[in-house]
Amino acid sequence: MEPYYYNKMTKQQQAAYHAILQGVLAISDEFQIPRLEAEDLYNVFFRLRLDHPEIFWVPGYKYKYYPDSPNLIFVPEYLFEKGKIKEHQKAMKARVDKLVRPAMNLPEWDKEKYIHDFICENVHYDKLKKPYSHEIIGPLGQGVGVCEGIAKSVKILCDALGIWCIITVCGNNPDKGIKYRHTWNIVKIGGKYYHLDATFDNTLGKDEVRYDYFNLDDKSIFRDHEPLIVPAPACIDGDHFYYKEKKLSFTKKEEVYKRALQAAKKGKMFTFHWRGGYLTKTVLEELLELIQKAGEEKGKRAKISLNWSQAVIRFAFTEKIGQAEVVVEEANEGELE
Image (tube, rainbow, N blue to C red; front, side, top):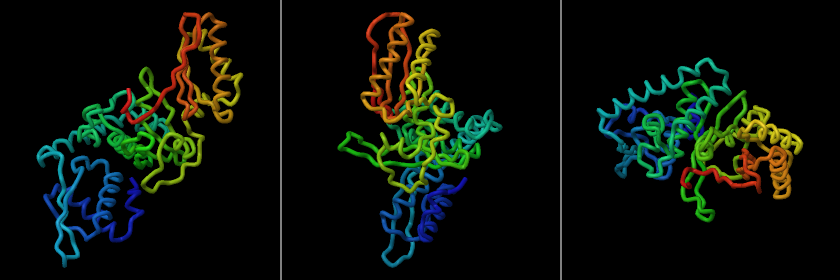
């Protein structure tokens, strides 16, 4: 697929990028690359790994240089010994081929959903942050990962299914208690760009797969994500947002009440997105009252959870009469319980 970040580089950076790529694919102990300043070299290596998540065996590097030389000696730091790298390469290729096979003939949007659901149903967040959890070998091989490994896994599966996809990264923000950078994906569906954050949906989906971060536009994603630290295409369309596609994105309060009555009658969990203007505290209180009223009419009590940033409300009903129970959810990198 398209090497997105490579195409954003200068000729000198591209030459170093290409030399590093060839060297680590050959699993060389060290090799020459065109000389770059330290910060420039870091950015080239960092973005190369965003373009090529299949290179899971080289998370870092060192380098040597001589004052008069136009080149650097690049020294990769490998996660495994060379024999093990080749074993893992073979296993990862077989794993990816097996995973994508059932989805090969699906429409584009359904392929994306297939990948998203696989992550949410099969990958657990690794709070120990083991080195391999930052690479595809964690989510795809061990069933554990952090946001970086999850985003890389999404990209490699998208690449295998012919979906345009990049990995994007935002900065940390200690003032907000955000200790780490966060990584997710941007995909192109129907010729338009969307944000896809499988890690955030994974942290919300304790009982069922959630889609609060499935194909968001820029305005929506940056309600609870920090600004990007890498280039990215603008995501200005919301037509393929999951809840809109599934006709679960409501603009009228009567729709919410009607669906709440149905959910109370059937005893099923129901999730919807509100797009009838800003979800202010006043609007939220009105919606919660309607959900509670629907439950009371059926002799049931509402249990409601809310992802306020994304205006997604989820509710079910119990047989007990009483005040509705409301929980505010917080999607995150998997750091919180």
